[in-house]
Every structure is written in C-alpha cells, then in structure tokens.
Image (cartoon, rainbow, N blue to C red; front, side, top):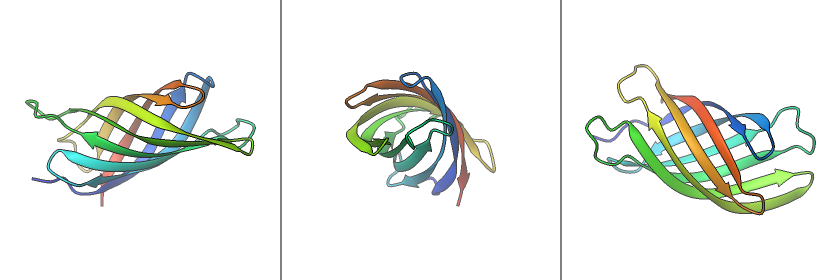
Length: 127
C-alpha cells in the first residue's frame, strides 16, 4: 500500500552556522517504499537572508515496522546574495501509525562549499 501525500512543518539545528532553522516539506509517495520530499528551510535572525531548498528522494527499507528511512538529494543554498548547490545524505525515523499526523526525526549531511550537519524534526499531515 502506498502512503497518502503529506505536508508539514520542520524545525532543526545547523551545526555549521550554529543556528536554528524553520521550514516545511511536502511528502509525495512515488511507490510503496519511495517518496519525493521537496523542502525549504529558513534561518530566522541570521544576516544575509540565509535559506536552503532541498529536493530529496526518501526510501523506507523493508524492516519490521517500516519506521527507519534514508535518502539523498539536491540542496540549493542562498546567503548574502550568493548561492551554492550541493547534495544531501540523510537518515531518520518516521512514525507510521500515528494519526492524524506522522512525526519524524532526521540527521542530514549537506555537501556543498561548506559541508554541514543538521538535526531536524517535524510532522507530516496527510493531504
């Protein structure tokens, strides 16, 4: 069975810039275990209008409860009028039985001119 598309907020911490970020994501299932996850992250209070746009592909391996996932994708970073493109690698846990929402917790590496490590959490609400 394929999950329903979802939308939700996310909050995280970027250890490279030592700052909190807020954002949102869209979870678009494309198969039983695969989903496209476009997202945006904004760094409030940070000078230079820092934000990151991500286009990720997430995979839930066939585990007992299907809670674990990992994936990779594209990252576009913007700060102080300059931009940079890079790649994401991530792994996380997503609640599968909670209704009407699914919480998630994720660790992400962003590889670009400045590599960063992020920890983030959020909720996915089915559409």
